[in-house]
Length: 453
Image 1 (cartoon, one colour):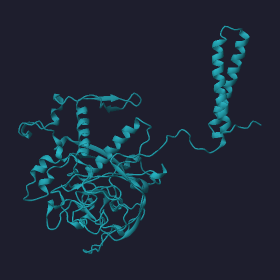
Image 2: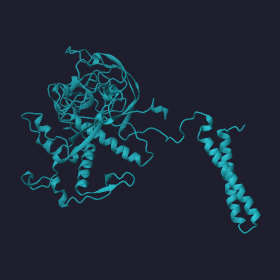
Image 3: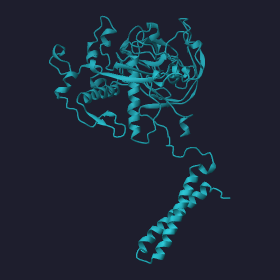
Image 4: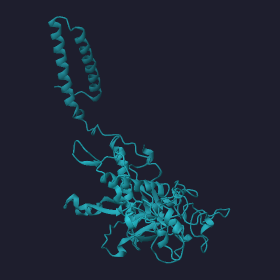
């Protein structure tokens, strides 16, 4: 009975076949002019080797009868996204780090476990968000100019990013303010045209549907204007002169490294979706292995990261006070009864100001409050799971206002010390823009620990 060769035997046999094939090929060239008998022998030998190759190749498709998995899988070494830090899996006690002086009971103590993830070491800055704005602007311009390329396989059309944009082309005039909308004769971009459609998959509904409905019923899409609302600097403060911030904060180079503000919850999600597409487009040119999607951190993921591995720490730096031993303030907030510049910043400060916490994260207290993906409910701590707890609710425009609340964390440059504490919860409506709310992205780590790689 013929027994199948082992993997080691096959590798030796394949090597021998390759060597013999090469030898025969060379022999053909050398004996080209020799007798017909010699040529016939060589032909018979080569045919025999060909049969052996086919036989053993067929046997190999079964993995020598062993369960060895699919062998042509791409390697995965993980990623280390630029500007992000790794936060390892762990357990944390969430909730008040001090007495609940307001007796609201909206942050009851609870022990939870969090899966490892990456998080931006700073809030998303004006210059980083501007890359998103430029991408949307350029994609619209390419569309106006009919800059498309067709996929030879699928026939789908895509924007041809390699074509140059002539901004003086009359076709693009609609992207700029016209007529009475012009101010001081300037040729300025009409920011109302900066619209972007993003998608997400409703995994919760799909899971509870258990395959009864079509996949398309769980794919959600929303079109949003992604240009920051610069008027928040005026709208948020009555009888206060903040027009210079409205005119300059997002565009002036002086504020490039400051956190972007004036973005609502939908705009922050759109940025995360675009950032994922940006990364996957780059990966498609490599090994084609996509990563998890960039997203807003969920509430307790954010709190876990803010604590920096320090159990029951009221602030990211671990102390019970907002000043160090020299009396220097450790975050950008509203000290005392309104001494805004005492901490070094009248409004926001650079995203990497002050010292980072033990995970390497900057400004997890103060500067700007930050959007999370989590829906806000006062009694959430009473029923959330203790494994990666999170509550999602995709409120529509027609939903009651109370269902549009999303958790924000960290406190801001205009908040008092209480909101800087790692356990303090607060909320804002998802379609609201503020001069003191920004965001940073998170990315779930695929694997048990970064040390696995």
